[in-house]
Image 1 (cartoon, one colour):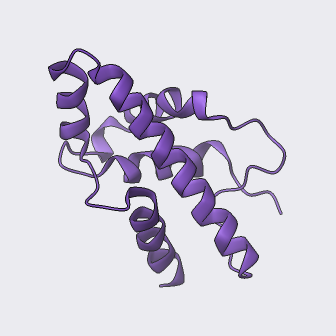
Image 2 (cartoon, rainbow, N blue to C red; image 1 turned 180 degrees about the vertical axis):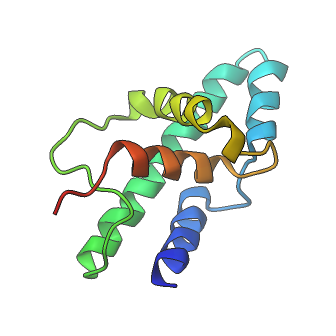
Length: 115
C-alpha cells in the first residue's frame, strides 16, 4: 500500500497537472514544428520529478522505487530511458497510460536498489 501511495504521489509531483498520455506525447512529437523538442523537455521534467520524489521519500525514511546510487542519470538520458522501456515492455503499456508510468518503470528497471 505504501508503494502504491508513493507512486501516485510521484506521478502527481512529476506532472504538476494532468499527466500526458503516451498517445498525447506521440501526437505532440508529430504534430508541431518543435514537437519533438517539446516532448523531450516534457520527458526531462518527468524524469526530474520522479527523481525528486524518490529523493524526498528517502529523506523521509521510506524505501525508494529506484536507486541511482552514484550511477549516471542525466536529463539527456530521459528519451532513451523512455523509448527503451516502451520497446522492452510494449505489451504492458497502452496508449492512454501516462508517460510518468513508463518513465517510472524505466527507472525502476534500470536503477535497481542494491542496499
